[in-house]
Length: 221
Image (cartoon, rainbow, N blue to C red; front, side, top):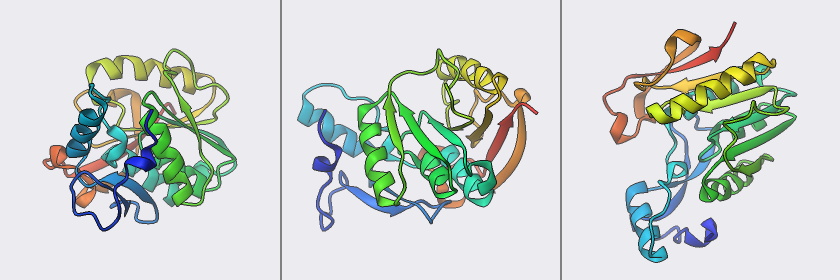
């Protein structure tokens, strides 16, 4: 795996394929290393590697993750003193928010090694400790995590079919589960309890520009 930091172009670069340490629109307290243009960054990485690369979900601050992070910072008692799992963490935004809110431990999980590298950079930039864990955890129940945060995990039918049973198992063993979502087609809304709604504003990427609200839900009672 290439070191993510080695692929960050100098700050003075005008190229659209650079990464930039940027405040998150809905959570300006947190700064992330994000791609100025994730698609261009992805194309450059594939060209350098000479092979296809995973979609760089970590290189954008997804709307659902922003909402979960906002909710955690606004309600720090949700995370304070808890063992937190940031599922499908991407940039690690939700986990970083949990760390800032006083979580006892934070683990950020993703299948993409670049995401794990991004989590390390982003956690360091925000002065919190987040442990990256690469791999597919969806056949389990979240282990000893007593708070599971899931931002924008219902973006496809295939993903929803695996994530929902995982979240149910985590909730059934006593973990608190919070989901952020801007209105994806595969969100299992009937199983979720709405706890917060945010105006999307500048938090949305181009692909979600037609959406106006981002919701945070709790799974279970």
